[in-house]
Image (tube, rainbow, N blue to C red; front, side):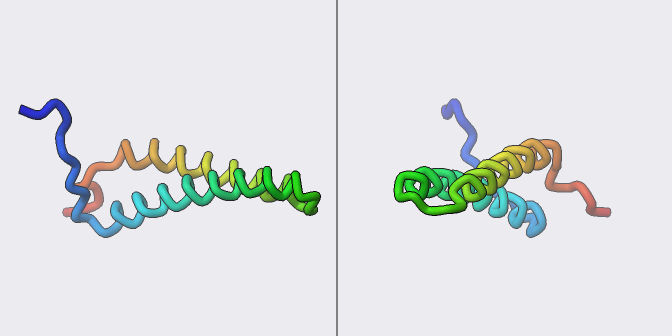
Length: 78
């Protein structure tokens, strides 16, 4: 008896692409935010823009998680 269900993913291609986009945005945004901290220490210009873009990507990924939680696998099918 398992306490947590095993998630095997979705078979809907549209939802699969959305899930991939979510994690790309979150991890890419976090990576660029961390890199902007190193760019600031190195004296490079544009580190504020890099941090802003990274934080925007993370926020977009979180919003898409909320959107994905509202979608069902049978939405849009007849």
